[in-house]
Amino acid sequence: MHTGLALTSIAIGILVGAAGVGGFFMPPALVLLMDMDIHQGMALSLFTFIFTGIAGALYFHRKGSLDWTLVRPVCLGAAATGYAGAWLGHRLDTAALSMVLAAVILVVGTYTSGVGGERAVAAMPRGARQRWLILAAIGAVTGFFSGLTGIGGPVLSVPLMVLCGYSVLTAVGVGQVLQTVGALSGSLANLHYTGIDYRLAAFVVVFEIAGVLAGAIVIHRVDGALVKRLVGGLCMVAGCGFILRSL
Image (cartoon, rainbow, N blue to C red; front, side, top):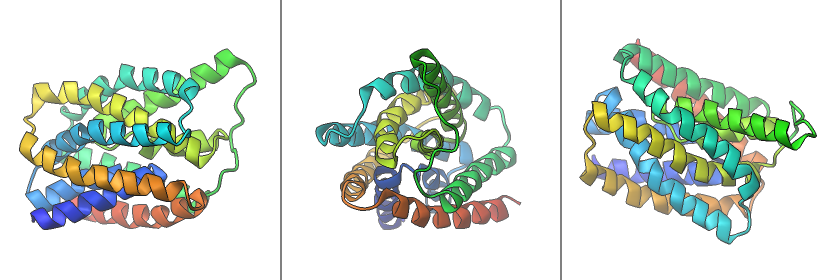
């Protein structure tokens, strides 16, 4: 089981580092491989993203691909809502929480498969204050669902930022910092409601970080739109599979 979890953690890390999409695979992987309930899996998953986000952010910053002017409003929004999402998650029954997670996976999969490129769907306003508020709202939505479901922040922030006209590389870079802030906020709530196996978390983190760094190297060398379309197919399959398992 630990070999399977190690390989899964590397694969998830690659997806997070390369496309910002992949964190939602960890909660169901922990449920399937380690026989955890969904709440424990989501709590441990979210905790590990604190450290993978730090590793990814450092790499993107070193490569000059991290726009800190975008990071601040997005992360402030996430910090304000991550705790509330985790609080609500522990008040939902397992079946409902599983369906929410599956729905999030399918929405992201539909987006990445259908849009895939970097064409703006919703143009950002010209005013600096309006842009700041929209970015903060993106962070707030992302932080809430990250805390609620235990997924990494980039899985939602990357599609939303790309829809607003930001490049995939820029969005993924911001998402690395965002997942640290959102995961930290949500984990503070989780500590009140469920225990975290820190030894297992450390095991997962080591392999996730290796994957994140590999994925970050990939996204700096290949077409980000191609990566997103490939991941979109995986999202659709995973979402459907998790819905069937929850029925």
